[in-house]
Image (cartoon, rainbow, N blue to C red; front, top):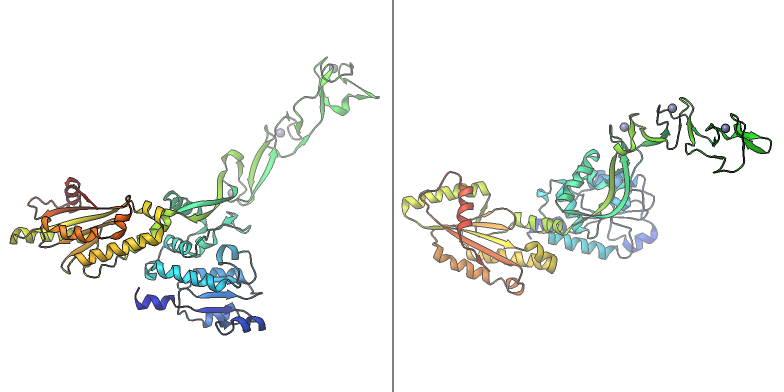
Length: 468
Ligand SMILES: [Zn+2]
Ligand SMILES: [Zn+2]
Ligand SMILES: [Zn+2]
């Protein structure tokens, strides 16, 4: 880690709101105190991307203040602790302020430091979310219930990180499909209007024949003698029952009469029926939806998955591959260099090598050995590569966990020194599943086509790999 990053992560403790006498005695000397949220935003100068921010009791609009900090370009990763929970604190804060807060804050700083995420790379909601969930271990992405919005539920974190509430569900499901998040708890199941996606629906029972909602339950009887059906009151005569149509005395249910199963009646078209239709009328756009046509959405809380951890921990790590002794270039630039070096090699009768090094079973390695070991492995890999290459060599990251090296004036036979260096990675020898695959191809090639990428792929596919 360089100095700049160390400064970024230096501790900074902020207290917002009234600092009571007892608080002052205990923490007063450690905190920079701001009277209220407005004061904080007008006067605060961030020296740290990971300040500890404590909200005192009785902060006005604490929920809005939480959102404002999480939306802030420099402060979104802040460790925010509250004295009084509010409707958003479970979703957006990091817990209650208490005696263990200092230990908690220190552990956050340790994790943030080891993530080594370069802040200017953090432009996407996904990177923000994954790194936040990684730094604040066990932090779940929680939905919050809000009747003022059509979707009824929303994810405050996603909103703060720039994902539109309208798009949040599809955004989440695509991240979930990529296995970067895993579902935690099923919080609720909501049905939405087909027309406007509002969750504010009124379920009304209505007449299956004319759709009127003017229906009522009726209690009727059915005479076995003549088949007459009518309301129960029409059958009453004295103390017993008799049919108003054929005047037969009805004594025993099941023998003389029964109750028809149609026990509901429409007051508009007078149809009798058993089951009313249920329609879901949208409070928002007035559309009448059939219930089975509504959009059904499960609302989950989410955790970061193993793949998500690996991406944020190692994906970023790989993007920031710290190969000090050589130039790291992008893939299209690498293709160009290969073509150019090939032409030079043909002209000057030189011999070069291109080496492809692939880390295999890395995800499994992390699952079995933990991230700390994986980072150790990558660090060691990195320093071995640094030891084996010269300033004239050119390096390129070609996809996940794959490195391409262009080694000028090196024959394939001379590659063994690279292999020897890499063989020394101590973790390789202790773990049988994890391995390095190395392949080398020689230059020049007289039949190199314009499609360098395809050519490289074919050449490497035809080579025997050395597995370390
Ligand atoms: Zn009707
Ligand atoms: Zn009758
Ligand atoms: Zn609607």
